[in-house]
Amino acid sequence: MAAASDRHEGSCRLGVLAFGDSITNGGGELQWGVALQSWALWTARGLGLPYTPYAVDGATASDVTSRQIPAFLRFNAAPAARYQLGCVYLGTNDVRAPGWDPDSFGAHLEQALAFVRERCERVLTATIPLDLGRPRTGAQRVQEANAEIERAAGAHQALVLDLRGFGARNLIMVDHVHPTAFGQIAIAERALALLERDGMTLRVHPSQLIFYSPSRLGRLRGDLTYLSRHALVSARAALIERRPY
Image (cartoon, rainbow, N blue to C red; front, side, top):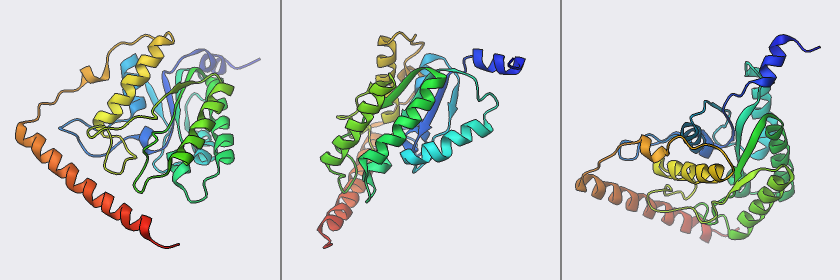
């Protein structure tokens, strides 16, 4: 017979559980005074639920299965508890690595989704933007990764947030990898719309939880900073692409 504490852990709901890389970990520069927080955290706030993150900067799919999940099992005070939502967003670091292996990525992602599926009423993952990185990762690689994401999601009844076309001046940083503060909120707004269609209750839009009022000079400075950084990143990318191998 299970102990009373085990029965309690298995019956409670602890909100939103998240695994992933720096995009899900969040953190970075303010954008017009708005803090750069994880899209998964904004999603939890929009649902009015507590948030438990294990995402780590630079993580690959194998890091989630070999490090983040073991960390959850070791350090979580209630490892047998269930959650209303599990968020798993992976692939950016995998697909940009020199030794990109879609089969290995897909196997680790499926393992991660299976783990989260056992503990969460709903599971949410997302595809990768096609215009990824500078130098560009390449559409073929990203499409291979997205195919694995959709395949693994289908195997474990996970919702898929389509971010293939995601990206805009104020939503993505000049590296064309990391979302800005507003970009994280935009991803969360899309995730919440998808979750609401699937039956979850939206308590508040994340965009309603922030306040900013930049002056014309502030906007101009922001645009000039972005343009100068983007030009530098683009120039470096062009040099790398021209290097002989």
